Amino acid sequence: MWYFTWILGLLLACSLGIINVLRMEAHETWIKEHIRLDALTQLLAKESMLTRLKEKVENSRLNGFPFSIVLISLKDFDSRNQLLDYELDAVLRNVADHIKAEIRGGIDIAARMDKQEFLIALPGSSLQKANSIAAQFKQDILEQIKAPRDLVVQVAVGAAEYVAQHAEFGSNPVALVQDVDALLRIATQNKH
Image (cartoon, rainbow, N blue to C red; front, top):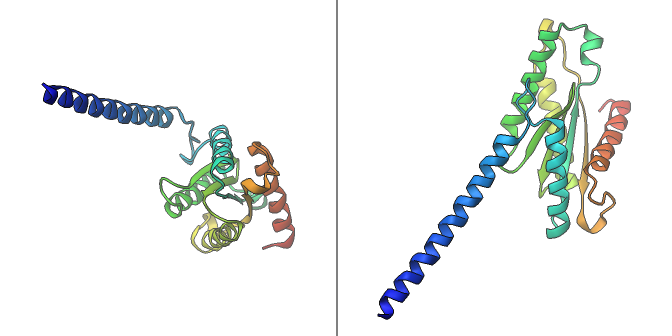
């Protein structure tokens, strides 16, 4: 008789575990299906990235792990070079494809934030690592991304780190993005 109780308990525990796994998979599927992507680059749209950044700030605040972001900008690339729309679109797709190929799948997230700006969130990465990654992206884009008529793609990068112990940003991902934007202006002025 106790065998039946034990088997019944085991079956119940297994079914609850399976239900929990199915619930988590359904939630992940729902998130993937409802995340807005940028139509041109197939990276996250700005609104989706800001939502994800808010989650990252909260996770970092709870677990104490830092995360960093990298902003990549091709500001005024089209107006300086008088590119046609389809030529600019090709450059932006090439940059986005390079970003997708270089980030850690399932860990890092990337988005198109503005017409010619991309943002990469790097969970678990320090500012030093983010600066190194930003410099590598800049070098790669300068060397590997080709524009029409052999124009050089000029790029500026900036990085910032969220550290839970120094929660200057609170839970405001917009402030984090603005900090990176300020670093980007400095980077642009110094022509790095």
